[in-house]
Length: 164
Image (tube, rainbow, N blue to C red; front, side):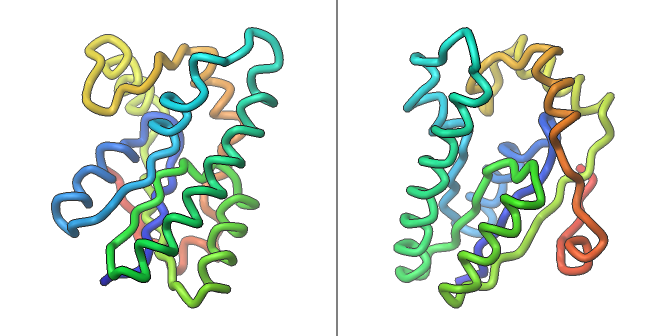
């Protein structure tokens, strides 16, 4: 069994597509935050303060995913966490949690330019591809540009950097 894989990348980087490849090549189980958010909470999304509302639910999802991750790892099942990992604080929190439980996570960083990512988002929105969970507007895409923190130099040292 391999180490838990944390897939990091901004909107449209190809995280969900990459995670699905790992399902087949490594017989992995994927926890995909977009899928959980869509299935559990999207229907209740308020029009006002949606970002703050979403953060609370994302925290709940993350907590449950980590509980389930430990169970699967104990059964020797490869786990892939497709949580976006937009911020350093979240990445550090998850890494530390896994390390405290004697797991050695590995970051797979999808480093893709903004133009390519927007083209992919448009295609996914239009064609409702396999990884489509919800429509991502240009406004949402641009907002994500302001909150995404690329990997820092120290994070890059141990990460697998991919440019799909």
